[in-house]
Length: 221
Image (cartoon, rainbow, N blue to C red):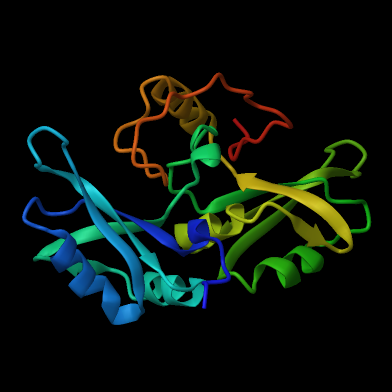
């Protein structure tokens, strides 16, 4: 029967591969955590040399979670870096390929307290801090919050989901980037940013950026 979950959510980008690693040795390692429906080491079309990264696709998200909880992973004697694959559509967003442990949560209502956020997000992973932002003068809630986790994978897992209903309200959730990360992300995007941890096998052009909407900065400075 067809896998029910979208392929996007079942796919991992594997970076930092040894140049010795082949489709087969990559498969042999990662199939310990589940059934792989696809497994590929990306190669240069001319020289056929490994580009040092690849993708593995599992049959369900549960297996992806299992593989991610088994980090660190060593393939052909080298520690590799697995991350949840980013869709082509998301890959042009600022910071799409950065690993961060903090999220920005926008559109939360007056009646939403820290415990509502904790209840909602703790099912994804271990929370370190929650800051519900308030106006310094009036103490009135500003309608957004920052949540920090102990693992970037928790953030990757959350931002892949488009809609989050917290305390009965639809909220916007994205990676919280420091000003410096925003700048790095914008300067990299025109160049296609290195190996591009995204689904498609081709190249993509970074689109123009809609930065700072709702001031999604992790830092205060």
